[in-house]
Structure formats: structure tokens, C-alpha cells
Length: 391
Image 1 (tube, rainbow, N blue to C red):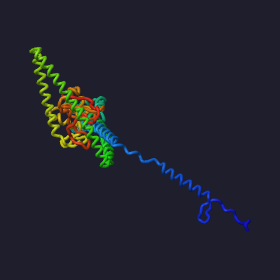
Image 2 (image 1 turned 90 degrees about the vertical axis):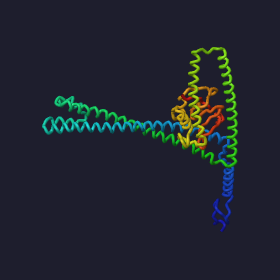
Image 3 (image 1 turned 120 degrees about the vertical axis):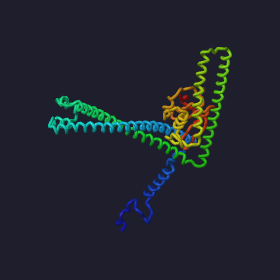
Image 4 (image 1 turned 135 degrees about the horizontal axis):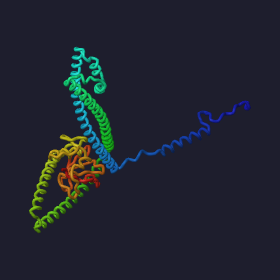
């Protein structure tokens, strides 16, 4: 009987127990899975608060750069819109004049038809794409009266002018469309950077926020110390200049000619100081209002919107964006900075503030902040690009 038994195939179950081969494979798989789980890479390390602070500052800087592009494009688009509107109005007026000239030609054609004179010629004239070509090929002009010739000349002139203006209007509309597309792109770039910054800040817990506040406070203290040092240097330089001036006066070096020049210079300086004082008074009145990118007041401002509005209050017109404002005056050294001067920051000239003296300024800092007075070293780096005196 034993000889009739079939061999038991390996890998089958006997009383619910695996054979050694399968059991070994299963145990090996479990071990490998366990090792894989233990060896799985951990989540990406959490950035330090210092890294978060730097990243947020970088994002705000990038947003401000994009804001300047947005402001410049928006201003350009507004100018193009005015040009398009002007051209379209011009085209409408010229079209009216063209229609009037055409009606007058039509009345001549009707009169000729009633008298039976040159009706075919006149009909051909009115249907011609280019009346002048037709006149060049016929003797029609010789049969027209002086008044009729004047009407034909008016028609031809208005037709050419209207066609030219329509072409200009079409090209300007295409340019405006391109600017509007660029405007949307710049706006999207600003919004993206601001969203990234907000997302980073929203992930901070209470402890993280407290540490971030401590970092900001330390930066402000360092900035205030640098401002105080600049104030001491400027005061020392001013004192030395006054002593030198007094010494020069005592030596009797001033003559009638130099005295006249001195009075003229003094009057000019007085006027400049008066305008600077007006600009500063306006800026101080805006302290506490929120920074809003693209805003020019009166309820909110971005950085260049504030400086533009402040100097406008003093009767001085500044361009809209920082990299145009930087060319709207005389560049002076930081040591020679006076109240009312514009202080520009970063290599890309993406930020500006209004100098108030003693190393301090009034500016609209960044999204989420308010117009405020603080050190020109507010960002904790040597990021000052230049100082410009509007005029």
C-alpha cells in the first residue's frame, strides 16, 4: 500500500502549518519589510527660525521687486490707454469729416446725373478705392469747378489721414494688449511671493513666533545702533564744516561778488529745505497706514508710492517707481544726507525711504507692516544703494 502513495509536493500546507521552505521565505520577507520601515528616510528637517526669517525677508524682497515691475507696467499701460483713446477720438472725428466730404461728392454726382453730364465718370470716382489714381488716369478734374475740386481734395486728404490714424490706433491697441498681459504676469508674481511668505509664517507655533520676534528685535537694536553712529559722524562733519566756514569769514576772504553768490546759494538752500520739510510733514502724517503693494494713497502705500506722494505735497513731481525715482535728483553721499532725501536699497533699487536725519527714515516697509519711522539699516545688512536729493 505504501508504494501507491503519492509524494507530497513541497510548499503545501499540512494541518495549517507551512513547510520549512515557505516559512523561511515568509520570515525573510517580514525581516526585509521591518528593515525597510526602519531605514525609511525621515521627514525633511524642519528649517530653523533664522532660516525662516531669512526666507520670509527674501520673499518680501522678491515681492517688492515684482511690485516695481507691476507699477511700471501699470503706469505704461495707463499712458498707452490714453493714447489709444486719443487716437480713437481722432479717428472718429476724421471719419465724420470723411463722410461729409463723401456726401458733398455725392451731391455733385447727383447734380451731374440730373444734367446728364459725366455721370459714368462720377460713379466710377465714387466707387474707386483710390480716387487720386482715377484722377491721374482721366480728364475728370478738368471738367470740375473750383468748389468741386476743393471737395475732391478734402476727400482725398481726409481719406489718407483717417487711414493713417486707424493704423496707429490698431498698433497702439496691440501694444496696450501686450502691456496688459505683462501686467497680469507681474501681479501674479507678487501674489505668489506673498502667498509663499504667508504660508511659511502660518506654520510657526507660538514658541517659533516668539523666537522670530526676538530675532526681529535684535535686528532693530543693531540697526538703531548703526543709525546712532551715523548721526554722530554727521554731527561731527557738520561741526567741522561750520568751524571752517567761520574761519574763512574771519579771514576776510569774502568779497562783494562772493557775498552775492553766498546769498543766492543760501536762498536756494532755504527753498530746498522748505520743500523737504513739507515732504516730511506729509510722510509723518501717513505713519500707521498699511503697506499695500501698488498703492499710492491716501489710505495705504507701497514704498515708492509714499515717497512720490510726500514730494508731490511739496510741489515736486517724482516718477512712480524706484528705479526711475533714483534718477530724479542729485546723488549725494550718505554722510551728506539731509532730511527729505530719498534713500534707495538693494542692487535692484527695489526699496526707498524718506530720510529724516540721524540715520532714520520714514518708509512703507513690506506687506503686513505699516508706514513707520526706523533706522535706514532696518534690514540688518549694508543694503543701501544710494541717496538722492529730489530737485
